[in-house]
Amino acid sequence: MSQEPPGGPPLRQAAVAQLLGALLAGTLVVLFFPAWATQPLILAGLQGLCAALVSHLRRGPLWWLPIHLGFMPLAVLALALGLPSWVWLAGFVLLLLVFGRTDRSRVPLYLTNAPASEALAGLLPAEPATMIDLGCGDGGLLRRLARARPDCRFVGFEHAPLTWAWAWLSCRKLPNVEIRLGDFWAHPLDRYTLVYAFLSPAPMQQLWDKARTEMKAGALLVSNSFPIPDVRPERSVEVADRRRTRFHCYRPAGPGHSSGYRPGPDGTGTYPWIPSRP
Image 1 (tube, rainbow, N blue to C red):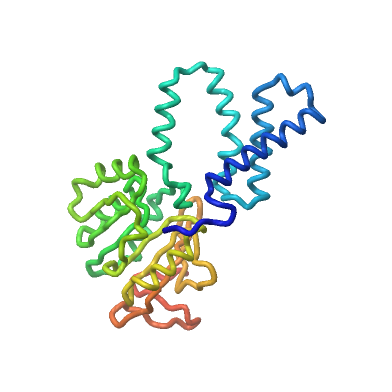
Image 2: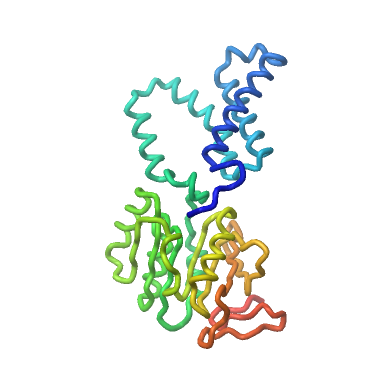
């Protein structure tokens, strides 16, 4: 189970920020901008700014800021369109199927791009290996890796029903890919050569504790973009993409006897199958 962050789950924090943002916006309008009281879209924009400010001051998740900014203005615009009620219901169900567990997992939907997929393929050992993607999204990463390395086996976990269905359908003809619906926290990691995670800063300490307990010696933990707090990676790999993605590579259970690991001159270690950067 994920540990609850300070201030409560992100959805509760977001609701508080929206409420306080509305109160702050209303106060500003009454005291300084009374003419705005008849302008719904301006009011909504001010409320969004105030809600984002409150969320930032309360140290809410950064990925909620654009949601706070756009939630009320989009709601006002949608109401102005006079859409039938079933459209609202369909939209709510769609959001629930994709983001329904984001509140508890504290992990938004991140997708691994093609250059990062190619770089990750370079971290797989030359011999057949088994890899797990902790939150595989639409399965794009696993499809690319499965085609590039048919000798390896790939497992992906996804907790959002809609993205899981998408990943499962798109990978169903690949014999070396298995897509599972559920929470990866209950799944043991001892059978995998490489564990890949593209999560968020929030669960990284919990992931490290799980990896140290369960991963076998020599197995590699690769975190896309988010380092383990207070743990120095054995190596960081920069991806040649627009967002300058960085992989943080760890061996939670130590190098093992057959991992190919050897101490580097700086004590951080090297990977024989990873090309050295110039």
